[in-house]
Length: 437
Image (cartoon, rainbow, N blue to C red; front, side, top):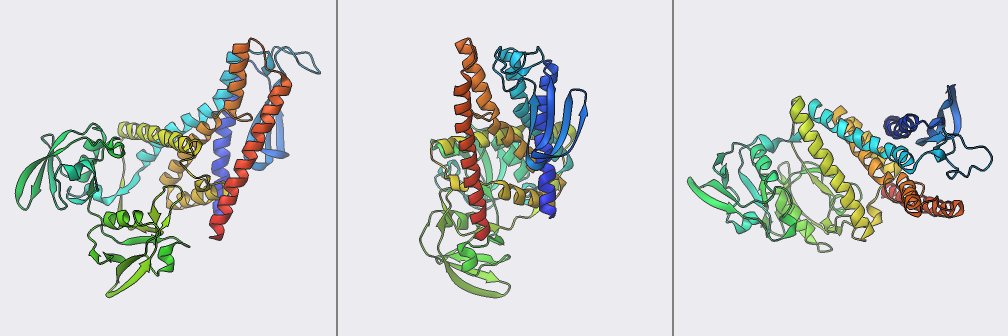
């Protein structure tokens, strides 16, 4: 019940912000707003103030703003004389402004919420405050090519002294071109090594290079229904060998599992004072494309708070990253490089909302920002019945010099509605199957 209540409140806020965008843009453009409803379906309560009836309706997963003349084509009102306050009486630019105001408000909300998250404080991996001793080096990475070794302690990057992983990560992420000189301490001797830019596009993005901190191979969580659970692994287990090779890092375990889809792996585990071996066979993760067994590492965290300026900087950066991630997922879906089975629907969103709320206010606000951003971006898709579909109609009207045929718009909207319902059915089915698994 707690999860459902939090979910409804969060979704209600996001929808209110979206519809308020349409509402305020309509009013600013002199358009009469007949109804402003939070939710769809039968009216629960309502009050008319001026020309507008404000409603709370039975179905909370939605909302709408009903404007005068919204269903009419410009100059072609069917049953009444067109008023200058009608939506259909306004110019293409004015109508486009009203349509785009909804998703724009959701995107703006995300950029407002994210700095608040950093100001309240975020839980970061505890290793960021530790001395920058290399715990693992990724295969085929710039770091491996540069001669770096596990155990090297990073002293300087481009002659700038660094004291912890936070400084190392900050420098690397802000210098995607790499091409850096690093001083490291190895067995009491100082060496100068180069971190060159990799030709592999995998490492061409912001800061990385393949250098990773120390991370013990301790299981933090075992996901239900996955091979690890069936093999008897439990939270707190330390993985000490994998296929008879000693394990020195969690990354070693992760890389090995990812590359052995469908192949039986023998794992030796230490649980308390007891040691035992078990066999597990990784399954392919349909979303990521690599092997998984359903375990997550135990990660110690520290609460880090930022001042106002830092919060704004980090919040803006994180929002931009999430925007890019959303477009990347859409691109992979369209190009069939990502299975639709990886998508989640209302059940999954509700579950994640509840988990975020239990993690703390900061995590809940961050999740709301992410959902608001996705709501804004997805509404811009050129699918009839979505805001992006309306923009397509308006662009076509501007090019054509006159409105599209009403029958054509109705057919397009019917097709768009059918597509949307199909997508909802699929993601809901995915949710139900996850629950049963």
